[in-house]
Length: 328
Length: 278
Image 1 (spheres, rainbow over the protein chains, first blue to last red):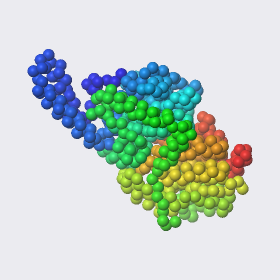
Image 2 (cartoon, each protein chain N blue to C red):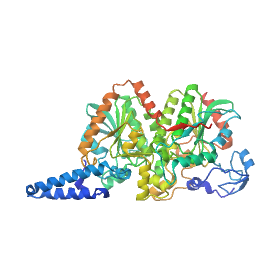
Image 3 (cartoon, rainbow over the protein chains, first blue to last red):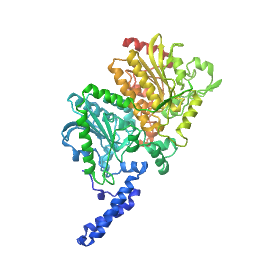
Image 4 (cartoon, each protein chain N blue to C red):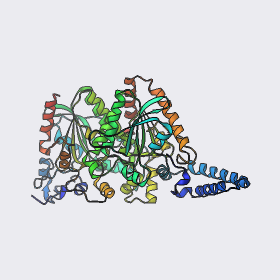
């Protein structure tokens, strides 16, 4: 279940003033004589809300990345609790194992029976280690594909929640064909004959994100990021060193925010988050997600299957920025 | 045979393409080689058999029957949709790479005969910004795949790339989906796709079209992988096993059909086309 913000000791440096006011508010609220501080409380709340609104309206790309990684930010299983009914998880890739970094399940969202696929990062230290911090192995991508084929067979739309720093880079993952697993998902998702909607809920790290991200409609939560590489990875290669300064420059250069991705035509929608980010009000975030999903599926389930697959193919075929040289 | 220093992926990762000049040195065994003779030997070191990195144009010359290559979309050029600037502006990097190579971007695509069989042939070019895949590579490949689909021709792609081009960020990432989606249609139409992996094939290129061949061939001792060896080392904090992420490693773990010496590549490709009846 999603945690209330106050239960986390984690602090974003640009939120310090907000957190201080939030602390004062909760101290006052907890006093038995809090009624006598009504005016002060009201002023504090107004100041806090204004500050949150201002801070979050002007997040830099690097700050956005850090909000997207906030440990209190809702993860796939948190959204499952809030917006899915009759959750029926399906495990295993039938070949190697069951990767906890990708959850697959039959479930109901609004009026729809769907197949849900989502990265899971884990909340406690033990969970995080078990989930490899949301970095899936090949068996995770293969599990996802196996269950997507089930969805196709039984005519269920597919909903994916993307939240990964990237696919896991390790010996086992290379040995078991990380690249092949992702590649096959890209090819197969492009021709699955059921509607697919995808939401980047936190981190959209490269091929590991795209591996469950080839859909008819792709959205990003307002404070998530989606890019070809993480800012740190990019900084380490192009700036020769990853530090606070170069990470920030890389995040800016990569155009990885929801707003940038929408402007560049790489996604179809930005789902607004509650003031101060999804971690402040997970319920509001999940409601916004649910209404977007239901709306998209309402449209997509009415499209005949040949058209659906053709439109998805065309959606990705269009993307690219090329010119023509005049000299040759 | 010399001490095989190229056995570790890291050593392979630092290799560059063969430079111009009368004489050149083998980057694996340091033997000084006469360039003309090396060219006749397909840029394979006669002493240690190291398969050197070659340009896309050079690869086309090696693969296609003489004078049969008809290039497609030669005039397609990269743009700078994000106005990306790191230590240098992307625009300047493009211009420098174009000057250095005389090419517009990192891939050659076209129709060609290979041992008398008509094919669509695509050769990536590591000399152009490390063969990275941005919009131009993605678009030219997708167009080549569509052409192969229309004409029912076998598709041969020689991969040679450091991965997706960072300076085009999300645009580059989506080329993975674009090329894979085009291959889905080619597959639906019953097309034959022979993917040839050369040194190096990594990142977003491996994780898209390169691993989707009906048959996947690899040149000996090429670096092939998803994550780079350095990233893996940093993540797991331990040394990588000997020969990790080489063609031989992939053959053993089941992700490559055959390892083929450069001198046999043309005959292997035409033989596969024969078996597929294309």
